[in-house]
Length: 496
Image 1 (tube, rainbow, N blue to C red):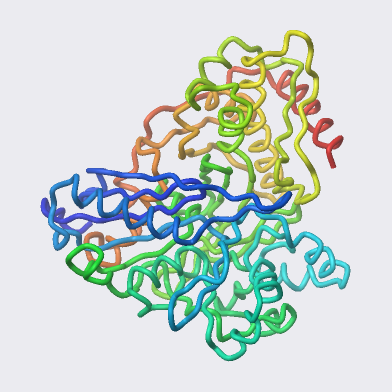
Image 2 (image 1 turned 120 degrees about the horizontal axis):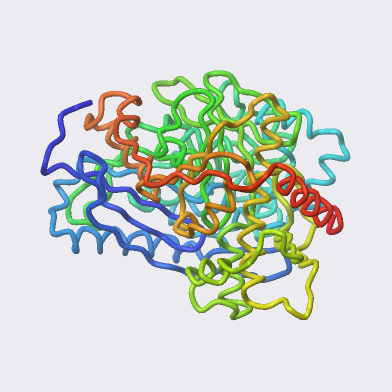
């Protein structure tokens, strides 16, 4: 590890689905200061989810400026900046002016479900899966981009003239931070577009042709630790090197020090994402998990198997904001404590369809087994338990692919809830390790920025810095676990 320097700092920008956060770390990856701002969600039609691009930019910029102001450091003390982001969310903007053509289409958005079905009916899913490791689902960026080109007036003609830029959120923030000087993405985010060839780690011309997407709109693909340019002086008063970009879940994999083959992490934020490091060779799932790029350093790729759950913390947010069942998200833990695991209520949270391993965009949420005794406590427990049961779905799929897990490293906002973590261990039968720093996503981005800028000397340095806060072990018998699981699977079958 390179020598720690007391006056050297790393800044991580974590642009998420519901908020934008900036965290300042010292050279030992100890968090020094943070700031976060939430922004509005837009739901213009059933199954549609959008963000105002200006909200993404302004909340990111404000969080950075506040961290620098509150920390009392000078911008020149920040050695490098790393960006991590909600993946798959899709933006299209004018190359000359930077004007965004419409709201960002969020990863949760399901508007392209019929188009994906048409591609499947043409027998194209095996080709996309072989090339990209992904399935034909509206979750990914390519069909969102195709929709924008087809439905925003003048967009397709402008794209053919080379006048437009496509990007996921990392790419868009880089464009804004450099004042339009750099149009680039990183290999981890590119691997989530349904357009990057996993073998070559470049855009796939045949897939572009099938989807009728002009190559001119695409950004350059770079390593996760790379020279992405510098922030424009106007934003922080001093240019800061942008030295890393990584998709949020891949960032958490690194932040959790899962850098060796067979290591598994699960992040519980708006959704839940479990990534298993599979090393230098991609493993293609027989159980509808995703094959994705974990990270690319010095041109060398490391791959992962991924299971994606669309609703995790967002379920608790729904109970709080839409139903008024909770006054705060933290209250879910207190309410659930008195509820037995064998409660009759089962919540299947398919509010925006089901992710892995089902991939059913038409499934919708349902609550089963209500009685006259069903109240706030039972709803809170059923909501938390539904996330644990979905996690077990993912682990079962990984085991079916010959990749059984032996323990689970977890991070994200939901991991503050100890009742949930005990339920997670009980439902999966695995030891659950909570990271000492719950913001593993931004930690991974900061580490990569430090790796590129010389604060760290190798990927192995993250292992020495990783710390476990607490471990949970299952107290549930295998027979009761199996009984609960069978009831869960029966409930899922009813909503599909």
